Image (cartoon, rainbow, N blue to C red):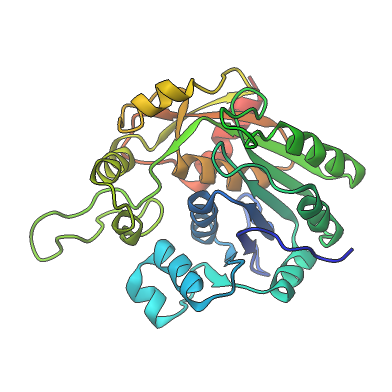
Length: 306
């Protein structure tokens, strides 16, 4: 099958040597339009020991630079790669090479990005002969979305059919409104003022790209105080009314129909590291420290056993 163009893709390739005694680190490719979650996935996968790449569709130098800057900051983007970091790449040949080795694929979608195309999903399965597990970031309430053309339910069904036909495990991670996604706490005084004290998600540069002051303030507060997660098996919740969502957009109080982008990304990475597929709903929880990669696998295992 010919590899068709896939919108903003992140991929992870595991090193040859696996960590004995720990969960596996499969070769993973991530596709979809939720850019912040994609980049968080790449960075968190690299932290978990995977060799991680994020593929930028446009192939422009500026977009490659921005992907690196969002993950690791301006200085890193200017200087280039380093060991243990995710790398931004572009080009159909690079995507095809990664898929040819991929053992897991993650499709990152949300209520604003909309679904992947059927042809894009078929191209992924057609070019990933070693594929064992796919994960799909979807919305609460069966993939339905409050905005026209953004619902993910049809894409979910197509993905499940493709997975069954190819004997591949499927995990669905459901979230409501996504918030946060940055590094967490930032120094405000002293010689390190303006630099991040923690490194939970994307780099401090992510906050610099938020031009609306109220959005930036709420995002930074969310990354400091709501990086925990409540996890349930199945799909027990529904998406909130758009009017309610707009009213609470600036709040960093954790509610069940909100979710940190950090938690969404971490749950997706953990899901494909598990041997069996499942369906999980991830909700925000007040905490100043997110679970570690291996803790996330235990959290999903516990939810699956309920």
